[in-house]
Image (cartoon, rainbow, N blue to C red):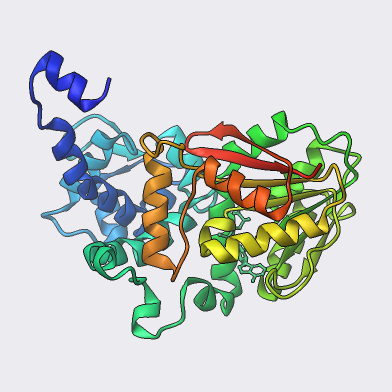
Length: 349
Ligand SMILES: C[S@@+](CC[C@H](N)C(=O)[O-])C[C@H]1O[C@@H](n2cnc3c(N)ncnc32)[C@H](O)[C@@H]1O
């Protein structure tokens, strides 16, 4: 039921408007908890509000509202009430927001807190000017330029970025039949998580991740950790300058949306040129529904590209189909993976 139908049946209700309008309260409360490492302080333990306040240096005025708001938001547990109450992680925050957990994905939220939260404050300006509102605006190094120089920050960021996609990557590996193929390449493969999962799910495949030089050590370590380094190599290159490594299947996870339409077309043309007939390109992104009505996350991601990049934007399946056919692909399909994420697949006849 959409809001017009709801209003017709139940009368007007401002709840949704207020929830969205004040959504930044909840968002920033969680982001500050990640920044303060609350979920790591609570690793395998429970603490009183006073203990937490001492460790996190919380002011008397804020401590219980902060902690209990997180309880009410469902990202913290509390046993008891009043000053003797003890707080602990929920099962989800213990896995995903405790820095000592191997599945920690707070890196992406740390980035959101340190960068995007502020930059989105200039969304209205971006809407008027079409110009990025991030570091580029002040001449400082952009997201990648900044973190490429700091290997540990780069690792945390790439781990976080790929950590949040594990559900989509799992769904892709479970549904994509690659039995007819021998070799894959993940273009802009980041830390190699998708490549590792594809290799694990398809023992006959060998592959390569292809990314810029600073990413290579992160990918090498991750592939070794996944036990697939003997079948997945790390190749260094610039996807606008170098030919794509030859492969039967190309993956592009969150690559196309970074670029302008002409650059997207270049990447699709290069994928087509590198594939044999029968080859496949698989782009994994928050593909927007053709009617541009339902995938709110995909549409907001596209606004995030406006904030972050000179010309990037997210796209619909129909747009992907048009670009792929222009490159020479004979057929495309959109396969839903998880949440807002889909695989846009192009087949070379
Ligand atoms: C948004 S990340 C996506 C990473 C990964 N595919 C994923 O799905 O999480 C973009 C990746 O493209 C890489 N990249 C950016 N420009 C590149 C270029 N010109 N050539 C090769 N890789 C590039 C970045 O280093 C980064 O790893």
